[in-house]
Image (cartoon, rainbow, N blue to C red; front, side):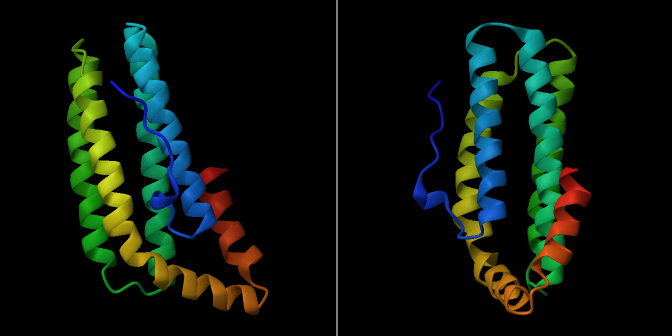
Length: 153
């Protein structure tokens, strides 16, 4: 399976979100390598890290949207919930000993690119406007810094 390479058409223009998306792409590529090497233990470990990081990213993204009064927050959360359930099923199958990596990687690559270019691109202007206002008021280190520590340590 081919590796996923970050390209500028995946940029939202929100640096903190783009860096998180790039980290998810890195995890996908680590998962791809582990699968190619046939190491089921490493594959399952990377899968767990990918899921944990993605869930944290979702929570961070949703908090940004809430702070920005993004009008489609509920719909975006719903997309995240459906995705989370699908991935949980893959994790269950992997824990039962099934090699789900090829199928999962295929689904994740398609889903991630479509989600970034569609759902995430849709909220970008709303978030950029909110962050721009915060930058002008010199508050960005406050709330954004707090949110980064809250979700990513």
